[in-house]
Amino acid sequence: MPVPLFDPGTPLRPLRGEIDAAIARVLDSERFVLGPEVSAFEDEFADHLGVQHAVGVANGTEAITIALRALGVGPGDEVVVPSFSFWASAEAIPPLGATPVFCDVDPATFCVTVDGVKAAVTSRTKAIVAVHLFGNVAPVRQLEEELGLPVVEDSAQSAGSLGPEGRPGSLGSIATFSFYPSKNLGAFGDGGAITTGDGALAERVRQLRFHGSRDKVSYQDVGYNSRLDELQAAILRVQLPHLDAWADHRRAAASWYDDALAGGRAAAAGVVTPTATDGARPAWHLYVIRHPDPDALQQRLQARGIESRGYYRRPIDAQPAIASGGWGRTVPLPGTDVAAAEHLAIPISAAITRDQVDEVCAAIHELA
Image 1 (cartoon, one colour):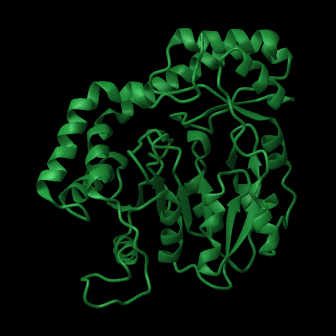
Image 2 (cartoon, rainbow, N blue to C red):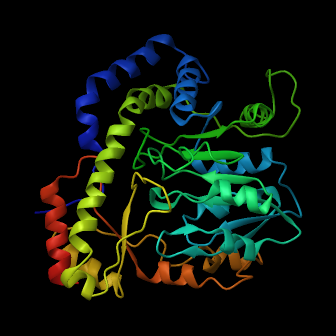
């Protein structure tokens, strides 16, 4: 039985009529930029997260840059960021003239820890980027309370997740989201959002996303042309009411994997299932196991028609652009090295069936 790594299409098929109607509504309105659909989605997304403000932007990468700039990050500042993450988590920092400083992760959860961040903090640290990687929930509140620094939540992979203190996007000073099509809440193209409980930060973000202007007449800053468009907002509005049910299905699928892979031949061969952070209920954007030879396991699964993928084999601090920029590893990152070398994402989606999970698990038990 072929099993895809992602299946974004199946959950959307029952919504096709609503999506088509939403697209037609935008076309009929002839309002395509920062109109009523964006405003409505911003309100609805903020309510969903339990936060006061949501601001739609063009994509998740620019969301991080704008969020950091809203916090006052600029030339000479340092921003602590995990090296085991998607490139954009760190890519967003140098355009501000700031320096990315890399911290370690716990390879069991794939998230930053307070001790790991603390080891990378210096007198020049202006902010921390904490990534809710693979949908797991980083200890954002603890970071802000113990270190006294603002945290940007990189929530690109965590829509639908639940933490002990609330949803990702409502835990730190400011948070960012990506609505790339493969995400738990995906647009039909690029899109992003910035969320915060701070009204002054929200106003600063709104100004920066629109060329540094509040009124198209006076330009207080050199800002960005970074706006979520009406069509994407309308499509996201159709999906948002279904996000929690989709997240529940992802959690159920993860529990099927946990039960099947926790013992027996797979465990004996070194397969390790992911660990949720304390009190978290992740909506697993990716279900990522560890294995001593994940690339070989990937090839064997592919021969069975089962898709899998290693995402971050080369940590960010080892990427060529980091070396050319003069940035690099300033503290040991042993957890990062383990996570990078051993991780492998196996199929999960809001529509994956128990039979598909059983097929993947049987293959892993046989091939690992």
